[in-house]
Length: 128
Image 1 (cartoon, one colour):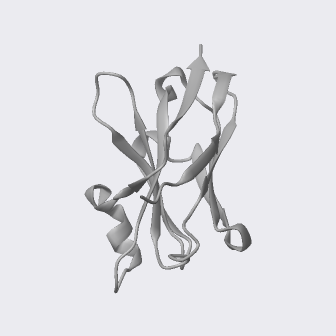
Image 2 (image 1 turned 120 degrees about the vertical axis):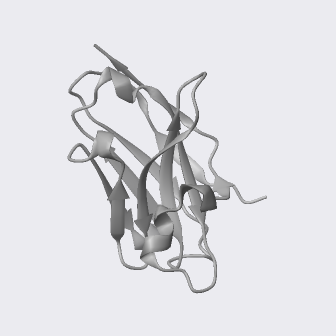
């Protein structure tokens, strides 16, 4: 089963920054959607950000707009989630996810339920 490889994360004080990395399946690159999700114990997993690799088109959930950004290194088939101005409310386990399908277009990346390939998750802790 394909699993995405994540790295980064850790602990930081409020206002600090962290960067998460995720290596995408090379055989699917670049016609795929990559997404970042997060989950707090006892709550549903929520979508945070997406990128359509082929065009670099991105989307962010309202709570992280202006603070989080996505970049990609196509030579390494790697996507990065840069998290700035972190808040204690950003504390969660973060998951990288992906999906690809024939005829994929950028707007399809906004469908959080479509993501079917996952990383193992990585903890991000922001202290006040």
